[in-house]
Length: 123
Image (cartoon, rainbow, N blue to C red; front, side, top):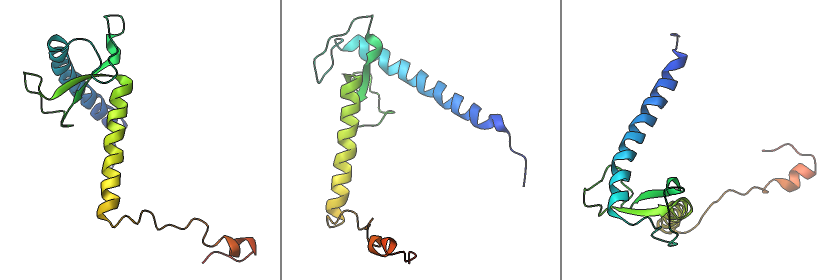
């Protein structure tokens, strides 16, 4: 077994964060110049004092799709942005259940409960 560099993962994470921050600064700054500082969902208004709470949402969910006209962006507050992504996850999960026949989970958490209560070992 070879030796591992314990700092390698830290460097990879730091590099990824720097790249994400650089990418974010680019399209975020552009979006803040194009659009009024208002959440596109709840209409909350922002000032320089709380601007950090206003985020850029990618309408097609592709963070690399950043046209200079801002057509793939919308400004959302932190709460509405989180809600938008949660709704997307729930819709994808529901679509997966529909395509799988809508059966949902087949796991029976208490299937052997009677045997466990009677002192029988699980099968």
